[in-house]
Length: 336
Image 1 (cartoon, rainbow, N blue to C red):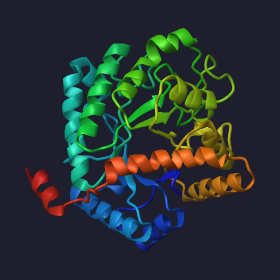
Image 2 (image 1 turned 90 degrees about the vertical axis):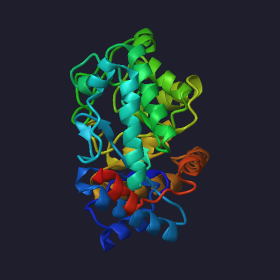
Image 3 (image 1 turned 90 degrees about the horizontal axis):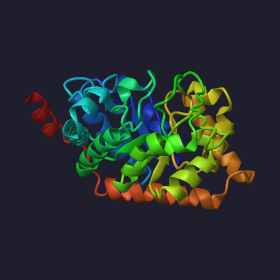
Image 4 (image 1 turned 30 degrees about the vertical axis):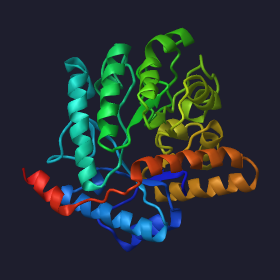
C-alpha cells in the first residue's frame, strides 16, 4: 500500500471511505473536484482522514491535489485561482512565485500537503500550450524554480512534471500514446533544462510521462522505462526524491498494458508511487499485481525497499510534525 496513491469518491468521511483507506493502506490520496465542496468541508475531511490514518495505520497520508492553475484546478473559488501557466510565463517568475505561494498557504490551511505541480514541459504543441510556462526553456526553468521554491517554503510538497518533457506532443496521453521523435540533442537543449533546474532547486517529487521518446528508449514509454527513470533521471541528473507515475488509468497506458502489467513495468522501471485516480477495481488490481509480482520474483525487493525509504524520507520531511486542518483558521482566512 505504501507504494500507492489513489483516488476516492465523495466529500465526507464515510464507512466506505474508511474501508477504502484501511484495505489499501495507501501512501496517499489524491483529491479531485468531486471531493471538494468548499474550504470548510475540505478541512473537515482532511482532518478526519488523517486522524483515521494515524490511529489505524500509524502514519499520516500524503493528501495530493492537481492545482496547476488555469484549466487544471481542483479547488474552485474562494480558493486562490492561479492563472494559466502560459499567462504566468508571459509575466515572469515573480507572479508564479506569488500565486504558488498563496496556493500553498491555502493548502496548508485545509490540510493538503502535496501539489502535483508545476508543469515543466516546454511548449511547442497545442496539447500542453496553456499548461506550460512557455516555449523558452530558460523561462520555463525560472518560473518552475519560483513555483517550486514558493510551494516548498510554505511546507507543501511540489512535483515537477511530466518527465522527461511532454511539451512537444500532439496527442493527449489521457487518450492516446504519444511518440516524441526529438533527438537527444534537442531534448538536452529544450526539454530537459527545466527538470535539471528543478532538481537543483531540491524539488521533492517528479512525475513521469506516458510517452515514448525513441532517442532515449525506443521500446518503453517514460513511466515504464528503466533507462529514463533510473538511467537518466536518477543516475545522470542526480534526482534522489520520489518518482510518481502519471495516472495508470490513462488511455496511453491501456493501449499497451493491462493494469497488472502496468504496475509491474512501472515499478521495474524505478517508480516509487503508483497513481491510480478513479476506478477502485483498478486500485485493487494494482495492489494485487504488486503482491503477485513480489511472490513470483518479478519485482526486486531491494528496489522496493529503496522506494519505501524515499517515500518515508519525504513523509518525515513534510508530514512530521503533522499539520492538521484548523477549522477556525480556515473560516477566518476565507471570510476575508
